[in-house]
Length: 153
Image: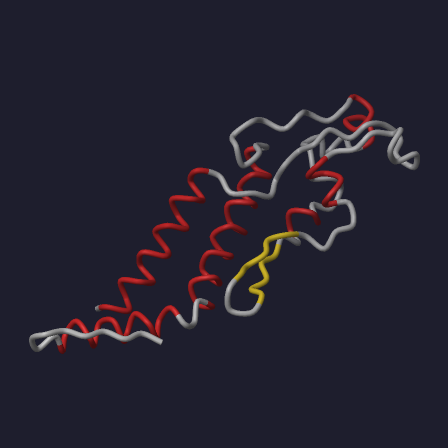
């Protein structure tokens, strides 16, 4: 509970603080916007073939390139489902998750070796597509600032 005591006629300050308190008790709208922004930037990573930290993904192996002649870009496969199924999910009123329901998403994100996963035909290099880049960070901060500014406006 917010308790503010002001000596003079702080009516405007009190009203603004009450709006801020009401606004911050429901973060869902801001989280939805943040989630949408992160989904969009994740989709862009598939086009640029870069991790959130800006490093380039390792290219497909020769075997992968031969198997997927028309789809030789990493993580696109024949269907492009991994990229197409990137989703955001707001959990409660205080968090948002970005991910893919595809079983192989974690393997693509973190990589794996044939020794660890005998069913693979070879080692899979990590190609991080999920995460927050410096541009994402700036966007998130902007969304939060706009959201808080609306509470006092």
